[in-house]
Length: 393
Image 1 (cartoon, rainbow, N blue to C red):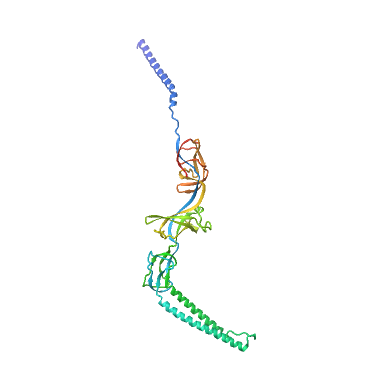
Image 2: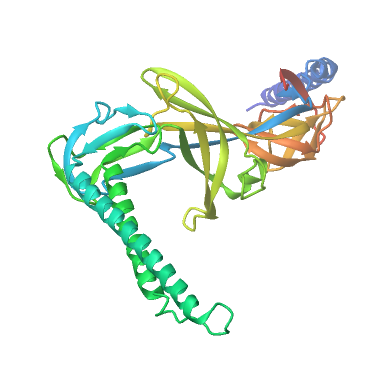
């Protein structure tokens, strides 16, 4: 390689180096010159959107719900107190038949009892005559004794002389015969078996022509004068209602009974009448009884065996706030959006939960905005964009 070629090669390398440096300087100038414009294009951070509701104080009546089966207040087996042949059965004494209190449902043959009653009556008449005779004989014996000894001689007539034992025996015999007469008269009356209350026949066991013995069950009847529904409640739910004999001695809380029957949705008014008086050791629940008067007065009736929902009217709470459960954080916290759109964590006092809501009496002020939606990242004091969703009334 000659000297000329070497110099030429060196100059070429210098030129390339110069071009690389020049291009680098040029790019740096361009970048530095566009720095302000890049800053201007940076977007501001987006605020998290939250749904809020406005808190409004209300007066709220507590309602305690329960479920149970409708049962008659009285259901008994109709039992014969005498023996004999059934000679007549009421047309209403059939399965499902209704009757009034005092109606004769079954008649038993009375001939034997009528004969026994006549015989007993004759014995009473005979014993009355003997008792009257014994009284007369006792009186005569006393008078004869007084005629002989005088009434003021200081001597006392003996019971045997006065025929007092014979008189006592005659009186005792009269009483025994009268008692026998009353017994047979009572048996005769019991041959007509009458209804003890307004009701319906549940089961019929006997019919006309059959012989029944004393103590046999003729059928099962139940009262239509009142029905009862036993519902199981938690111990703390009793605080909100009046239960006679359990929480107080006054009248029980009013209640409404709801049932579906024959394609109808029916409602009856009732009241808490009593509690069973003890807490179930297995479930820790208390059975409270709801009474409904005249359940069969309307059609379709509040029939025994129906499954019913019961709403018991409880105490009224003044100036409380009702919040949806989704607004509650960590059991007793809420998020408040303040006027500057920042979040504030607040502790509240929940006095009762109802379905999908809670009742709060402390920790909230009227008109405050309460967050109902969730955020993945949240901090006390962070700014948010609020969206008013609903107004609590």
